Amino acid sequence: MTDGEWGGEAGGVVGRSWDEPSAEGRGDPFDDALALANGTAPLRVGPGAGPEITAVSAPYAAGGAVAAASSATGGGDAPYTPDDPFAPDDPAAARSGPSGPVDPTPPTGPGPRPTPAAVSWHTARRLAARAAPGPPGPETSALGETLGRTLAAPLTALTDLPSFDTSAMDGWAVAGPGPWRLDRPADAPEAGPPSGILAGHAPTEALLDGHAIPIATGARVPSGATAVLRSEHGEARELSDGGRRLYAPRPAPPGQDIRPRGQECRRGDQLLPAGALVTPAVLGLAAAAGYDELTAYRRPRAEVFVLGDELLDEGLPRDGRIRDALGPMLAPWLHALGVEAAAPRHLADEADTLYAALAESTADVVITTGGTASGPVDHVHPTLRRLDAEVLVDGVAVRPGHPMLLARLAPRRHLVGLPGNPLAAVSGLLTLAEPLLRTLAARRPAAPYRTPLAAAVTGHPQDTRLVPVAYRDDERHGLTAVPLRFHGPAMLRGIAAADGLAVVPAGGAERGTELEILELPWSAGWLAGWTPGRSAPGDPYDPPEATGGRA
Ligand SMILES: Nc1nc2c(c(=O)[nH]1)N[C@H]1C(S)=C(S)[C@@H](COP(=O)(O)OP(=O)(O)OC[C@H]3O[C@@H](n4cnc5c(N)ncnc54)[C@H](O)[C@@H]3O)O[C@H]1N2
Ligand code: MOO
Image 1 (spheres, protein in one colour):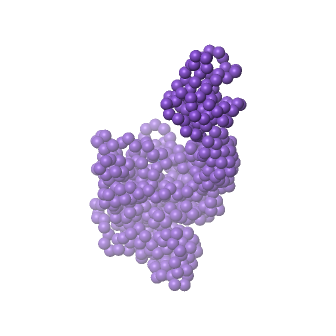
Image 2 (cartoon, helix red, strand yellow):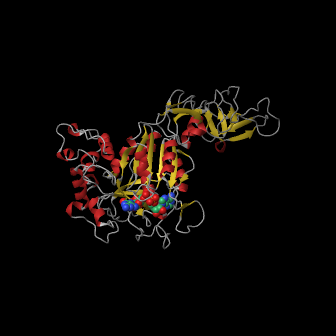
Image 3 (cartoon, helix red, strand yellow):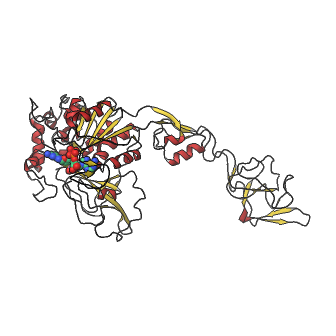
């Protein structure tokens, strides 16, 4: 059973690619998925919609529930067994779907709120990317302030580059064929080498035919010069008449070692289009092209609220309490995604505290950690209802992290609810927060990157899995992705050693299967030196599985 087939609603409506035309007059998939998540508007079913659409007119409709239930049992032949590491602990939960129970009837009174069916992982990412209408307005800022932001206007050269004919080498500027007269300029001291033209100095006199003058790399070539002769290719000799001559064993063809003005660009040329990411190299180019400031979209602003009274900010775990692993991780991770994130705030597990924090926040995106499930102090869902927030995604068919959620607090303010288990929070960050923040930062989606697996990976029966992998490059197999140990939902040991997360489809993947890899913002180069054989027993690269729980 594929992810797209799972859950009825997800397969029939929101599992369709956004790029496909809306077939046969069906409703907009985004609106449909929204209606599913909120239980509000019915799907707009056009004439000729397929039977799988008509069966799903509301999130709690029997058709959806039947489909979800049948998918949860694997359509009658569920591929997992009781001792499968991914098999649900609770058989009732297994029957009710991979991401929580799906109530076949609409809510009619007090009692537990039915959970809408989870959407597929790919759909969740698309919904998150489309949740915000676009980036906040552009701002003009000093160059250094724009690193990691997206250009809101094309970068157009303010000058020719180079802006003058430039010597590419240390040596002599020569005019015409050699040998050349090396006259000591009138203002040169009697002793020592003849002075020449240094970088940053503008030559005032033209070079006469048959003459040469010492010149430094980067210096402006005098008018009349036809070439630059490198210092190692010429020899200056004193003559009996007191003059000096420059000899070269080979001719100096016109233009040799001169970078002509405008070689890289002419003033007014477009160097980069609007939408380019401001990288360190772009800052360098912009400075070279004459910019002191750039117009770029402002960084999205995020606030992180860490929920959980059991969390300690320092010291060793004690008395049933544990260290907060998400606060220290999320702010720098968000910075790496080009987001302005204040230091995380630790909130007490009280509904009113969360309500006040969310109501007062002015951030573009609020990220909460923990409290997404239905435990006694899991206040995220009730607080969103109290705030009358619009839930866009409520559960995703992905392991770990399936209780993750996305809600709209106001037209341009969103909340991403990350599950408390640390690797599940990473999964939510990459599944929902990253696409949303990418839209807000006007960043282009990374081109999907696929790498063959170095070893088989077990799959979840219905859901996508995100599994930490490290790249290995060897002569025999080329670049492969090695699945790492310690990938349980409460573990960070695998992801801390990873270059990315492999997107493992339902059912798993064999060794050699090319899988999409979600790269981590800092992965390039950090572990590039790692080769097989250097791993020590117990390190994350060791192949045996140790999940410490279901993912
Ligand atoms: N009855 C059910 N219970 C749970 C389900 C379910 O479907 N039905 N889902 C499980 C899954 S899967 C996850 S993931 C968690 C999500 O729970 P919450 O988002 O409500 O998170 P908490 O309960 O607050 O915490 C879960 C776990 O993570 C630890 N935690 C929380 N915050 C941090 C942090 N900042 N640093 C380190 N560790 C953290 C917390 O102590 C818990 O151990 O729900 C399951 N339950
Ligand atoms: O999200 Mo949970 O098990 O999937 O950690």
